Length: 247
Image 1 (cartoon, rainbow, N blue to C red):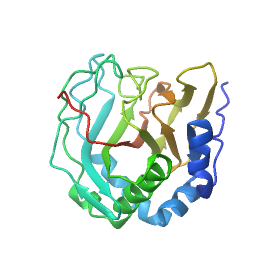
Image 2 (image 1 turned 60 degrees about the vertical axis):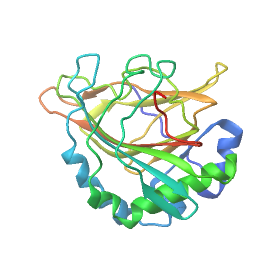
Image 3 (image 1 turned 90 degrees about the horizontal axis):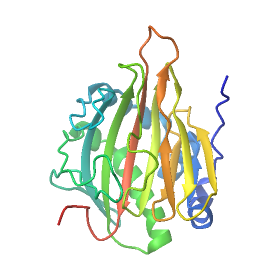
Image 4 (image 1 turned 90 degrees about the vertical axis):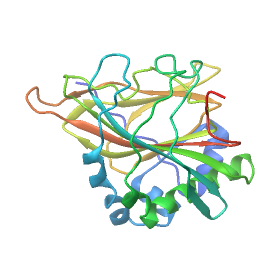
């Protein structure tokens, strides 16, 4: 039996320092709530929206295990503004499987974006980015993911260990039901040092300095062969100087 290692949690007040020292840091649910000045009930109010994600039509490995929505935002100081709908695009240097492809996903439900906790989360995390790289607007892409075990196995990162081509990435676990696997692995981009753990508590968050580390999540399988399971996450990427695009 594989033992799931717990994440090494950082105190919210030390988040920027931990990122500066190690390139990655994890917050427990209460730590995330402290950082964004919200309670768990406010975050939990977002959770049902993961039951309404359309299938990802762009999976090049032929899988049917991923559902998602995607929207973009600009955070400038206290202002959080939703950007016009745009394609999600990554260069092949960062995503060998899906790079170079304009992928148009259905947007996140406006009722979710309108929740005060949504803006608080984007604003607070952008503040951490500015603490590390200077005060400036941050271009945020938000992805709601559901990885399920419909076909017996689900791949949270079908592209393998990767960087995203942004400044910072935040991966937040929203739900984990009837699955095993899904181990998070983070490695130094320029060396052998790494860490692995499994996020099991909803609203556990991992923040990554995308220039310094690569990351992946191992496949999930159902706990019982006859019972389907899933793993839900919210992935936020923060980039200075504009969104990624083919131009």
